[in-house]
Length: 116
Image 1 (tube, one colour):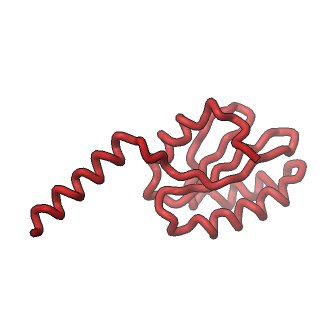
Image 2 (cartoon, helix red, strand yellow; image 1 turned 180 degrees about the horizontal axis):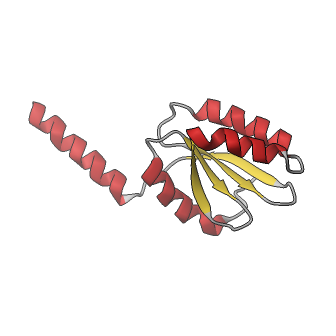
């Protein structure tokens, strides 16, 4: 299934760039605003999810997604959760066209050149 809010993708990619080295997930609720949930805040989120319609299923899938994404670079689980219980859960990584990423790669290349 395609990402349900394509207008949010640029915002999510920006957020992923900022938090790519942190453990956690990106959460989008009815407010249609993306926010980062750190790993330390996941348990309270899971408890709140389990109280919602279909929330137990969502919480289980989110746990599996967090385990699968651990150690996969900047890719993070993204959960779009609506108040009616509908949800979308996927793994999204930072876009390759980010100027910050290109700058970091260029810096690494310069450092490697100095070592030769």
